[in-house]
Image (cartoon, helix red, strand yellow):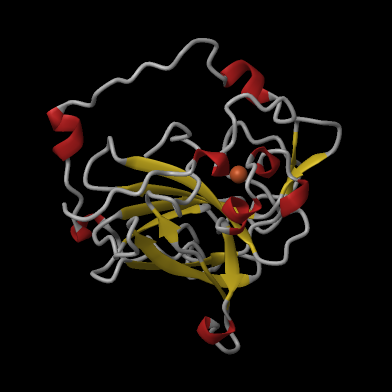
Length: 240
Ligand SMILES: [Fe+2]
């Protein structure tokens, strides 16, 4: 690897202790952080290959549907690129994504929101970036959902992303929001991010050029792995 190292700007990232996001009170560290070096095997293996993906893995409208049925909701395409600190494409990254259904409900045994399940929507999928760092998947736009924090707090519509490099130790996790959603700026989790520009970077742009006529709207979401313009990753507040 050659080129300059761009130090991240810590002012863009949330403090670990943010009392308006209640569970951060118990989860935030009480003592100074330790640095744990990763082992050689954690850094180098396993390596993901394109052959691990099934043909419907990046199609959430159909990947859990039965007998030719499709998921209910507003059909969208989400696409973008995974980039390094210098804007170069990152190829071969495994992206996993998961989301609530169009009503705002997750398919999970501990989910308690009263919105209906969609029998044809599982809410998760995956893709691997191509030589240009590109990925795309098809899904339905998730609904907003309430969560137990304050008296009446809601998560804006969002999709969770996990990005693997070439090993399990290289995992980054973030969330994508949707352009124009007024719920974004009311969310106590979003509001733990001090820099509005860092929040804007998590908001996917509606891309009219990429819409599929009479089929789907399209949203563009690029992910920057590190450096001054790094995407905010919730599992690496200390840096990545
Ligand atoms: Fe969520």
